[in-house]
Image 1: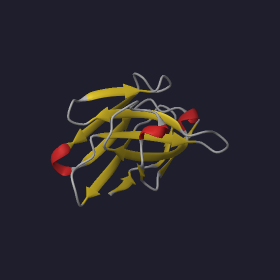
Image 2: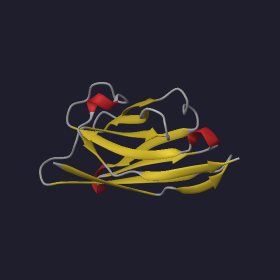
Image 3: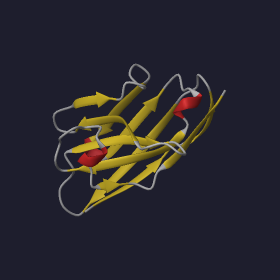
Image 4: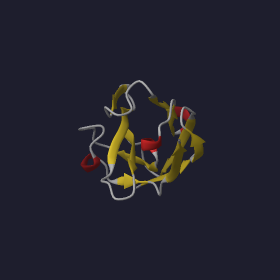
Length: 124
């Protein structure tokens, strides 16, 4: 079992930045892969960025490449998402996800453990 708690969401104007954090806790061993997803009202959940934690391999959704950066602190079991040059279309609930099997890093079906989400709102 993995528990995930997101933080860092908020409201920002277009062009601004936010940094999301995800704290992972587990009674066994740490998950091998983690990722950020987002879901806007009326839309399907979208993979934003994923990381294979012990390989350092990352993957990004096309809409955020060059603007968002996923990173981690393995010692603290923390996952981060630095979001720069935010756009109104980035407005969504952002979720942290984790699992022990690394298949497609930004595919929803690859993850069994999910946080409750943190809201990001970008105004124009």
